[in-house]
Image 1: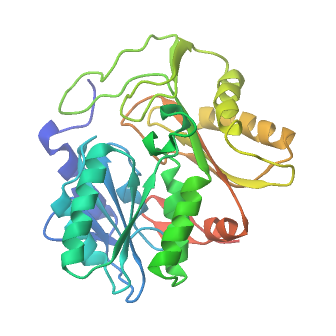
Image 2: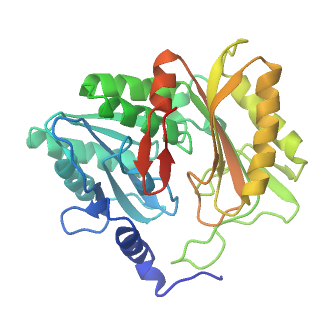
Length: 333
């Protein structure tokens, strides 16, 4: 294992110390480095909180800032933060209008976020929740509640963040976040494993000439393992799964996120987007908002995911709105 480390036990906290020193627009609550919050509060605005395991930068904590989230609780690598940490974040970011939790569909996160919401309720803080489940590979149609939340959660953050910045109510922000959730689909492919620092070896094994379609961001099994194919064929297979679940019509618009999992060069991600664009154009669908880069990683795993958000007028406005966070900047227009 080659990594820039000191003691692997301190990996997460030393990473956080670096973030706080580099980005003074964020700080932490309750004297706990793992309770990251914005340093700029806005009275009367709905607070937006997320959380999950470390190892996925810029998800989760990298999207705390203007026009997006207000706080994030992070656990160890691929480990849920505690309910107490989430509760401390909630207390700090509540500005009198309530708090919306946005996080991925993983058992540990669900349990701890539910507990944090109960603690917040005792303090009179209204909390609602939207659980991302965009990974079409992780369950069949009709059982979407079993699906994992992966890179498509970025679109939920973006829509909810813009809605909250507009001063909308907790109910309205929740409605719009849930609309973004319902209209987002993601497919991923992995080419290599990752290494959890405290473990020190590959999480799983995959052949040098193999790929796994649909693998999760923690190494969860995908839907098929096969020989590595040309990029266009890989995208075709991934997009076929997304197209099968969305009734796109000529003239529709979408937002596209081509996300690297940590070990894939940006050049290769643009080759993937080239094919995504061709497939959309063939259906008369316009990619109105496009992001290509690393948004939800899995340490140094080689691979990528494609997320498509089917826009309508409301979502188009929210996705286009400005945002400024340590790991994401977007200028409206």
